Image 1: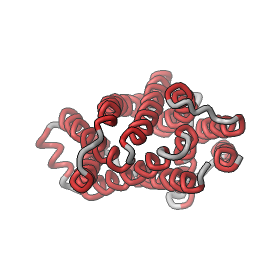
Image 2: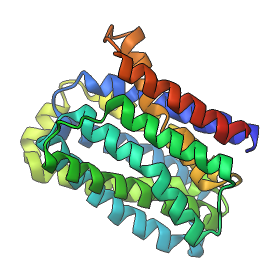
Image 3: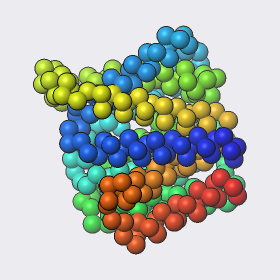
Length: 277
C-alpha cells in the first residue's frame, strides 16, 4: 500500500476521532448536525467556486451518495435514540471494512491478498471488541447494522465517484454541498426553523468548525482511494474508533478496561498487516 495513502488514512482517522471527541461533549445532536451541515456547505461552495463544474461521469455517484447520506442520518438518529452511542457507533464502524471489501471486489475488481484481507478482518474484529456490547438492546443493534451498511455504501460510492471525477477534491466539494442542504432541512424539520436558529446562535463556530474539519478529513480518504485499494483505505480509516478510545483515555481521563486494550491491540495488528504485509 502506498505510504502516502497510509498516512492520509491514518491522519483522517485521527481527525475523525478528534472531532467526535469534541462532539461528544455536546447534548444537542440536532443543532450540531445543522451546524456541521453549514460548515460542509461553506467548504463545498468554496471548492465549487474555484474548481468549477463536476465531470458528467461523476454525477450518478453524487446523486447516490446524497441519498445514502440522508438514509444514514435518519438511521443514526434512530440508532442513538434506541441504544448507547458507544455501542451503535462502534458496531456500525466495525462492519464497514468487510462490507466495503466485498463491494470493492464486485464493483472495482479489487480483491485483497490473503494477508491484507486478514488485516481488514482484524480491524473489524478489533473495533467490535473496543466498543460493541453484547447486552445492548436488539433494536439498537439492528439500527447499528443499518448504519454500517450505509457507511459501507457511501464509502464505496464516494471512492468510485472520486475516480470517475478524476479529482477527489471536486467530487467532495459537490457532494458535500449538495448533501448539506437536505441535512439542514432535516434538522429544521426535527426542531423547527425559529427554535433551531435560536439554538444554533448560542455557539455556532464549534459545530461549523467540526463540519469543516470533518470535510477535510474525509477528503484525505477520498484522495487516498483514487490511487490505493478502496477497502484497505477504509479499514485504516475505521481505526478512528481506537484513536477515539486513546483520546478519551489521555485527555478525557476515561478508563479503558482490558477488553478495550485488547481490541486496540487487534486493530493495531490488523492495520499493520494492511499497511506493510
